[in-house]
Length: 331
Image (tube, rainbow, N blue to C red):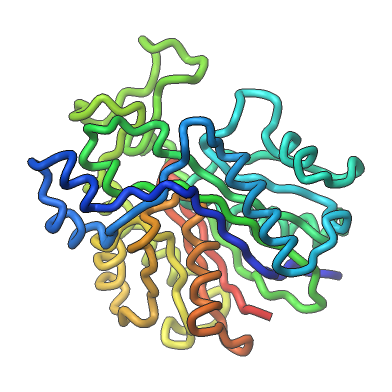
C-alpha cells in the first residue's frame, strides 16, 4: 500500500498590501496598536477587485511547478479548498484544471471548509492514494475573505488576509500522515457566517449569534470562537496523542491554524506548551483561513527546517463549527 506525503509547498500572496498604518490613517478612531497586540497582525495582502480565489490558486500552482521542476502532466487529481469560489457552478477545480493545462483524465473537486480545510484536504488525499485511485495530487487552498468585509468593519478587516497555496501530495512507502480526527458542531454555524448570497431566502437564513455591528457580508463572534477553540482543541490534541501513543512532550511542533495571536496564546496556555513549540507566523499575512497551515509549514521549512525523525501535529479549527487534526512527519 502507498501513503500520502506532504511534498513541496508554494504560496502566492496578492500584490496589494494593507498595513496597520494605512488602516490607522483611514480610521483615526481605531487603536491599531492595541489591535495589533491582540491579533499579532501588522499587515495583510488583499486581492484586487477582479482577482478571485482561482487566480490565487493558479498562481500558487504555477509557482510550485516552476520552483520544483514538477511535470504538470504527472498530476492526477486536483483538490481545491475554498469558501469563496468563482461561481456557484461550475466547480472551480474544473476551471483550474483547464487553466493549468492538466490532463483531462484526472479528478478535480472543490470542498467548502475554512480553517480546518487543509487537514481535511490531506485526509482526502491520503484516502485517494491509499485506495490506489491517485498517485500525485495537487492540493490547493485559496481564500478572498476581503470581498466579504466592509471597509468600516474594524473587527474583521484587521484580521483577515487573502492568499493561495499549492501543496504537492506525493506517494510514500511509509505513512507520514496518521491518526486523523475530525469534529463538527453545526449548532455553532452562527458564530462565523456569510448568510447572504446562497439560495436560502433571507427570512429563513441563519441569523448571526448577535446583532451585527458592521455592514459586512461576513459575521464573526470572536469571543465565542475563542471559547469553542479552548474547549474543543485540547481534547482533540490529547486524543491524537493517545492514538499515536505519544505524549505532548514528544511532539516536535504544533502547527495550528493561525487565527489570531490572542486565540493561539489562550490555546497555548490551555495546553501548557511553550511558544517555541507552537509557532506563530501571521504577522505579515493575517488570518488566511484555509491557507494558514500550508503557509506556516512552508515558512518553518524555509526558516528552520523540519526534522524527518520527529512527529508534528497539524490542527485546524473554526467556521462550521469544524475541527480536524493529525500527526505528521516530514519525509
